[in-house]
Length: 510
Ligand SMILES: [Zn+2]
Image (cartoon, rainbow, N blue to C red):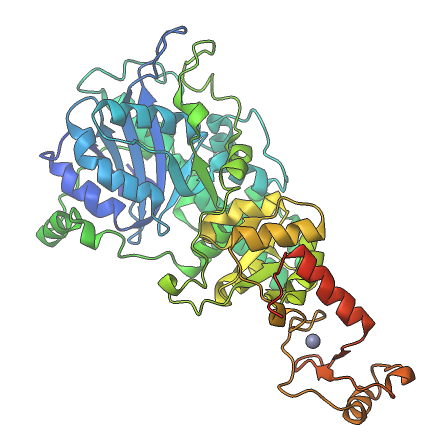
């Protein structure tokens, strides 16, 4: 067999921990930063009130060495309990990007299958996750997911590969599987990695093109694929027959790897590898989270359960927004997390008014560094400054998994209500001498000692007007150390203090 990828891909059927491939499997999944997931199950009849048993779980791994082994895990026998912990870890590991195609249904059935083997509570979350349908949409610059495109269609378009679907409804419970079945099953997982590779290259290509010459942005995908610069394996697969692309070539791993494989079964050595920077950037920008909700947990007899035909709706995103509505804590400033105990927030554009209110009660509430921040900048700022992002933007919540306990969706619409909501949610202690202790303009702190009226007039020269009527009165002036704005204890000040005493229901200590 000739042609790039064909030489390097191998399939390993793993049916028990005694299988020769088991060590390789654990080694490979703990040394990959990207895996492709797919599952095959026995079709069940409509009206049958159970989920079908998953008989085969395919995991394609992208290893550093550019080898792409595909593991076919036989779930019909004794394997599930012995790989449950590893799979759970894998599905949640921030260091492993999981790829799937409408994988939610697979996850649901997978979870039910593992539970039937006594593995509780099954699987309910996969993150970071990227759906190939989403990738396809991004490649076509669509904001919303393009519906009804099948994986075969996407493979044909992006890879020039035709995936045969005739084996889809074959008997996946028979053992041994035929060579064609194994190839078919492996390809479904493997093509996910290839499609992602195209996407990743395209991202890189766009970045390079923008830097050098923006006219190149018009390049079609096919054209970019065929660019001599991108002389990767992907290119060559265009001329590869799908079935030829994957053929079982059982490679004997060197002894060293075998012992490493043994070691990697131990939890302590899982996840030694972190994503490289370019991959992390893609995950931060596009990564998603797949979550099963309680309503997913019950089989619905009214719907057909045939593979793929039933995977019409893909609504996990909307459902997830509800799921993370409640604040879980602890916040990054918590002493338990090594914080200093001082609450710090980052208010996005939609809750700017809330930022001012929080400052009025002395809480550190920053706004984004730039006027129209990219999501990534916002996330970076929150992480760097250990802040909790306050937002009303549901889109931002897609990135919640990158911001563990660092994002909260404000539910109230009015500033006063929002302030109370935040105070109650984060159990903030507000006392009277904290009021007006922060610059409402820029979130800065005030100088240590108040200024006299003469000093204040001097300081205000050129950028702030102080009313002359203040001259006769004995009042204190405060200046922001960051933006130099001057504040004084006039009527407005006293009214504001009283307002926040009322809003926050502060009992005056006298
Ligand atoms: Zn200021």
